[in-house]
Amino acid sequence: MTYLVYFAGENPELVGYFTLANKFISIAGNALSKTLQKRISKFSQYDEELDRFLVSMPLIAQLGRNFNPSLSASIPGQELLAIACHKVQEA
Image (cartoon, rainbow, N blue to C red):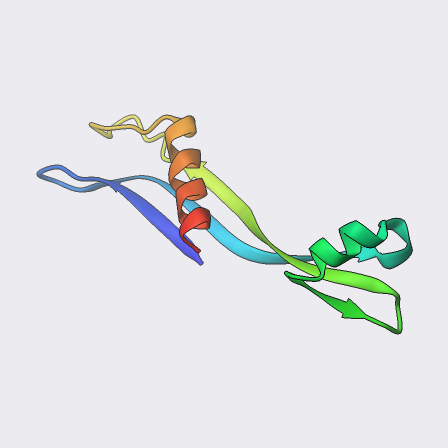
């Protein structure tokens, strides 16, 4: 999902964007202690055939600022990243 970030003024201007996606990683079951296997099983799926845990994670796939010199407003990259992280936390 792509989010567009606008400067809210008299004339809204696109100052940046970011894209969020789901990413799956696999973790070998034999690489984890029994305690970690129990913890990770709460938010993952276990594949018995492959002896792996599949974990879904949020991914900030793209992050970009508008560098057009004719813009009257700009957003720092740190602030844009904070907005993206806030959206991840909401999910």
